[in-house]
Length: 485
Image 1: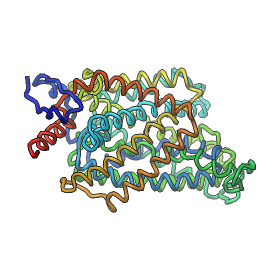
Image 2: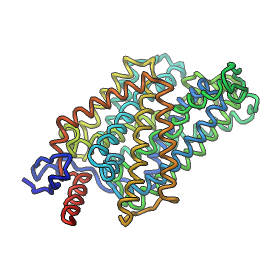
Image 3: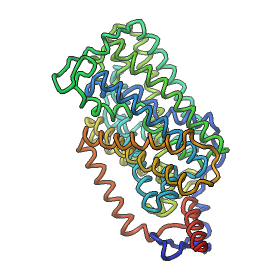
Image 4: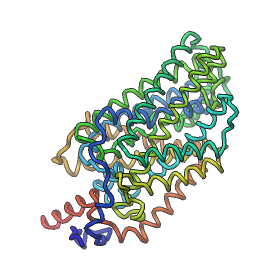
């Protein structure tokens, strides 16, 4: 049995169990599979489906003005957060991502709650995305209706590619994302000639407090549009989950994160202005396929419309495919450290966490199959989990800057804790907004969260694995603090 570091008794809030010397050997990821370009592509891939579907529901909730204000605020939050995550991921370069950051800064409970919130986000997001994929396929009018057979095929094919190997999966992701970018550019070029500022504000005011042509649903519409503005950027924070499979995480992580965020900001602005500005905000406010419906509304011609529909499908596939990677790595890290059952982190001969890939896929498929009419609610559950994780990760950045100012960092956030502080305040507002917009989704998320916390508090908290990378440092740091006293 391998000897493992132990935390001092009076400082311990968890207990560690001894594991065999081969424990980590059975839980190895493939090293050096990605450089910063692939990481940037991964970041864009996580999010790009939000440009094709989901964001436009914010038009129905807040009108164009409400969605614009919400998007500016959320773009600010994500930009500040990405700078903070660039520092954290270059400092704590493990597969745990947000769990690793929270574990080091906020202790075992902080790490568990951060990682679990991210896991809820990533396990649910593919289920929402696959329902949008079904809507796109149905719009192709090729005799295939959206439904569980379509969802099953997509889960089976793309989980299968991940099972083959991470290097191959990331390259496929990059290619799919590049094709999706082409579809977005073609759509923008096709819709620009139809642009009119009057189209942006064609949703009539409803008479509520503060309502106008710009804010047809009043001030409350801004709050209501928050979750859909988040969809322009949701999941970029998953890039650090690839840290253990990156060639040089201290350099590649910051470059990949920041480059990916830059691309996403450009596309969010283009879609927010030109899609409703071309077709009218009202025409696409409830669409499951807004680029195609926008082109149909302006009679752009079947050639360009079919192209955007066919090729635009790759945008949804890119996010679906890449977020599968993200949930598997988050679950892998939490399982490897003992927070969730350890069997979930066992890797195959190709260094792939195969159980961590398959189990959330089954959950996502069942949700999509039996709750397919509730794609927006599934999306809101994912967004609520994400917003909670943002609060905890930004708090982690602030705590580590304060408590460990001399910690070796491969990258330092411009503005330091002021930058992460801005992101923290906006993340708290995002949590409040998502709760107010869909209380049912929020309570479902909190219920799952509470059940997971109960499991950790009563069981796994007493059976953690000190040898796991995220735990090993904490144990050593605690022992050093004990000696200092």
